[in-house]
Amino acid sequence: MIPHQHISDDLLMSYAAGGLAIAVSAVAAAHIDWCPKCRAKLARMEIIGGLMLERAPVTPLSAPGVEIASYSRAPKPNNKAAVNIDPDYPRTGFPMESYLPLPIARHTGLERATIPWRQAAPGVEHYPVPLPAEADGELQFIRVARGYKLPRHVLAGAEATLVLWGSYSNDRGEFVSGDFGDLEQGASSERVAGDLEGCTYLVAIESAPRRQSPFQRFIGPLFGLQG
Image (tube, rainbow, N blue to C red; front, side, top):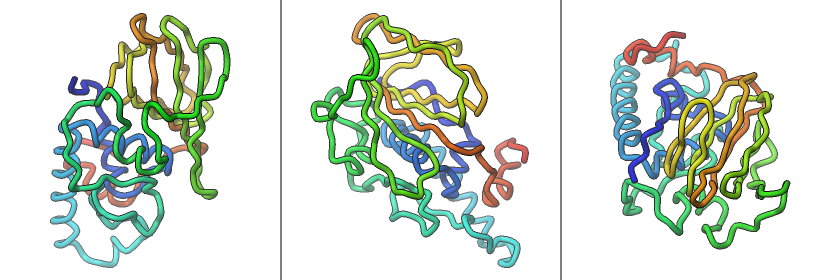
């Protein structure tokens, strides 16, 4: 199944510039690994941004975080990229039943069958993914039994999710395997797991509001994005 809920242009541009929090960057990288549409859009952004940076004066663009690096290359010096995609990995363009997205599998050393679940509440299990000490947020696997509902709550920080297996629904619609969702700080969130197999998803929560990167301010107008 090809994902139909994608990363926004604004968020994708921040990812390309290395401007996302480590946890959110990990979820974005996982979706990109499974989504041919977002991989293609990211490649276009990097090409356009690279051409513009080549023609622009050096001084205004010398601030940290403006260098453009492909999601398939090594981590950037600012350490905002938590995981990276192997460019030689044969991608299928849709989620695989038994495997995690490659960036997450490589970062955690886990696969679907080996996630060490911990009971969080009736019908809900979780596993916190270890992150570097400087990470400004948290990353977790969540597994919700079919038909169970996660109580509505107000987000303390921006949130990004990737459905790995199964589905969930909220007031924004239904999210199935491969779908990416994001909510801003202060948004109200409630999820109901699907009736067939419940839902397993990856979630990142930022501890601070997201800031716009210099790269994003530079090429954002080309994609209809305002600062």
